[in-house]
Image (cartoon, rainbow over all chains, first blue to last red; front, side, top):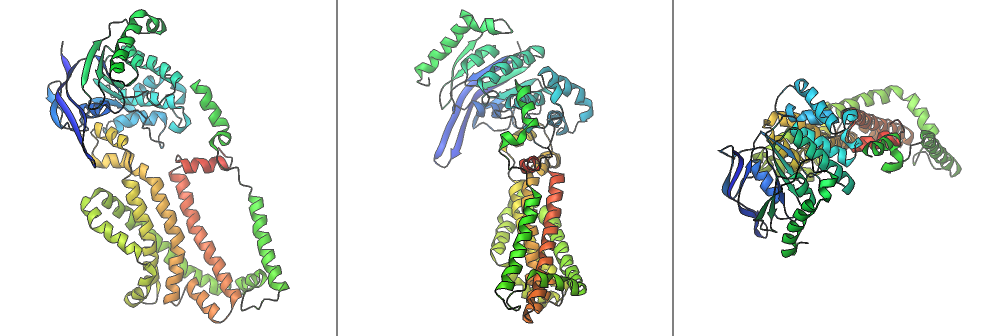
Length: 255
Length: 278
């Protein structure tokens, strides 16, 4: 199987006023093409740092990251990024925000309009194309951000706790939406979360990260059928995965 | 569920957003009228001498009688105010941009500008009179100076305040500096730029008036100084009222442009809701 993203001894140490802060690593890991991998860990374990390093937005202190064999040493343009907050701009409509992705690339937005509308319709925002972000609920704003990350059809999608700032009901809905989006067009996904059942529902593989300095504690392959709907989530197998992972964090005294 | 929530927000925004209630312009007008009446009555009842303060009726009489003079001086002050403000915008915004993006300018020009900001600009006025004479030039330059700093400082702040995630997003598209600036950084900075423009608009007439006092032969500031020299409070107050109107006009224009340029900003949304037109 061909690897899409590979981490070789990646480590990040931040300089701070109180001396160096060892955020994460060294971490070795590889993510296959089309694989959905979650980074699961407590807050402050350097998960977000890892995502930014893969995107080429932050240089690692040690080690290297390769995407399709090429060392990442500048921002990658073949990724789609979703942040914890929607990061939409208020002066553009919902559709305009999605099209910003291609406009920033100097591409003709007219050519991507149909695809953008299609993506927005698939997450139930078809009637809100002309609305401004501030007229939408938090969940709808985050869906808009998903569409923006997918518009240019990137082979890699990086998500930094995209559901972290949402209320519990909206999270459940958006998890299903995410799963549907991914099943519709499988991409290599690197998904950061601190929610165990979220990680189990969405991932092919869950990478459990320890409290800071973050290290890869264990990799767990989730062997359950998709879509992992309500019934699957109540199954003993699903709950077994959740329990196994919970046990790890119990040992660390995180939960 | 989402749909329902948003629909509700759109139909009744004022109930949820805590925005101020709609302004009743009738109440405002009545209050102003009553204040002028009270002023008139107090001056008459207590027989306040005319060289101490003139009643509104006398001010209105002079406004009409001295219309030609007032008109002439208003033109002079308007020209200084608007040209000075305009040049401050044209110079201030590009300089703020350059300062925001140049480490060198942030270490050299910017500290100098901030230091100069601490100097009372009016102190320069007599120097400008020597350099540029008693006419338009020296006054306009004072206006330019008092307008320039709020624009520069707010501009630098606006251009450097782009949230980290938006910078990441922009960099992950490979957008060059110019495209990222036009599509994201400039629109993001606009609300802060308007804070600067509004501060400058408030300063503009102050600068013009004081510059005219210090050394001038035309303008409303000069006219006020002449009138008070002759203890003609009625004429001086008439000129002050026109000067106030001039300041309000400039400020009003800036506000109008702001509503046109950044209708999406949270401050504008509150205003639209408050006037009930949303």
